[in-house]
Length: 404
Length: 223
Image (cartoon, rainbow over the protein chains, first blue to last red):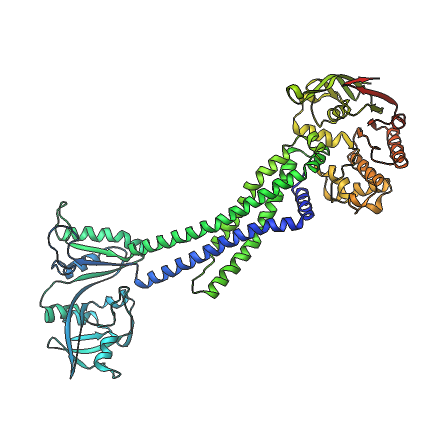
């Protein structure tokens, strides 16, 4: 028997019981639909998490002074005095590093004519703004020459500019930073609060040399900010940086690190992992209903086999082989599940769109989730159709013919 | 000429232990090509069981059954299905047309299992319907046809694959006398064209139209 003929027989049989076929299909439609809608919600939130993480800079690594050991009395991370500019330079020589900047920071009262403002002074190199993907609203950032000459220049964060100047143009004005007169050469755009709530715009940037020599009077730095190619290299480079730092600080194998290396990549991975688990969880909930739909198919097919026992007997008397009967009944189940799968895909996309429209949940139906749900529905059709089909094909011809 | 059907000492039992029924108790039967054999007997005499065995719908417990000089016991399930498809045509008392299936689709069913192409199936089925004068009924379902028409469709279906043997199990049992006679006329004319027919009946008038009359009694056959 050809496949075409088999398809014809199966379609004819289903056509004889249209309502029943439709209701059976409904189970699969619901199942596939809920899998797609659930996965849509899952991937939607996964994408949202990812977007948030990208904004945080998941390819960045931060090296801080201070030991993470649990013994003895320790100061704040960054208060130990062991990081130097030369450490930053050494790290900058590693492969796959896009940019490095040492950061020396201090809280200081700054003054402009009659007003003053307590803020954070950060001594950095010009690479800083590209690493932080920070743009200037006015003027320019300082250059390498400014760093070499330890020039008295500064770039204001938006909050500081507003507090000191209001709506006036701060460019080329002079402010006093610990009795040092600094010319304002640029103002940054607003960056907003950091992920832990600090106002990132409440800051003044100056060449690191100026801060070290003229303001702090010390040659150490509080941290080193590193930008790597991407998140995966960040994870690898974290270990390389640790190795270099241990060498530079001449730590013996038994000694603990006197610095700390963080990377947002770890955090990003953890968050993405949990978003993925969430997606799987939702998908599994959806697939339970698909499974129930599959049981519905099996149920109806078993009823159908019993009901059509005599018909099966007639077919066998007319020459239907085991595989002919098997194929016909299996194909009937498969048609039900494939039709249900196709309609379910449409239904699921519709439901996902509706959820996205009526709620704030981010919903994103991926082609992959459609493929998963559809494949799953076909598998359900085969698995749950096989038993009834085998039962039909295994009937004894003379007994099936006698069946009333 | 060697017989088309050769049966030697066939036994068949059903059920287990106390409920066991010894349906066939040593049947011997030779049927030549072109013969028209009527098998008579009361219900429960085992004639339907014999028919099932001749039609390869089930196998005997013991004994030899040769069809066209081939030993049936050596055949597997699929080969038996093939014999039912190509060599044997079945006609039943209750017609056994496929439910909610048109006359034409009923007739073409054996051709589907023979692997005949769609267009060829349609052509041959229509031709067969024409021969029996039922062309106008081709799209009717079995419940829209009279008993006589249903039985003629069933005969058309049995003949579509040009079998060498026609097995008719009380073909007139559900028909009135006049229609029954028409069906018998059809069978006789088919036999005249060379078709071997084996007929089960308990009506003497029907059996009289056959060339040979056999009587089944308690699982044994008497000439």
